[in-house]
Length: 89
Image (cartoon, rainbow, N blue to C red; front, side, top):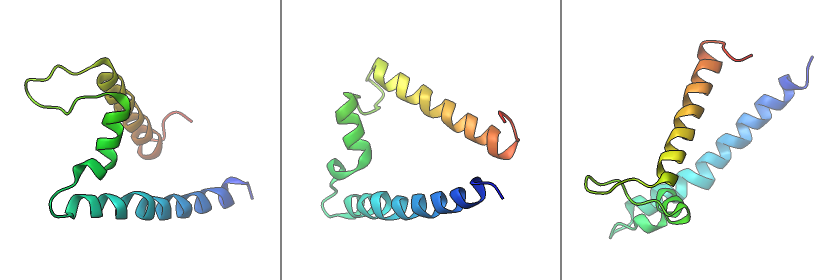
């Protein structure tokens, strides 16, 4: 038995609990408050910290926006290839 057989279930449980309590509940509350309080969402916080403008048609995206988008897409592609197509080890 390897350490991974104990580590990954624990990691997934803790991550799931954090995702629900640390992200899901606060994000849902922020989005469903009346009037709408988007300034309490994670996306608003991330944009303000990175200095990224909200994507609208007349806005030219900043370098920070493009870098964060590219990194996100690389992460998604890597995880998808790794898990479902057994690539990269």
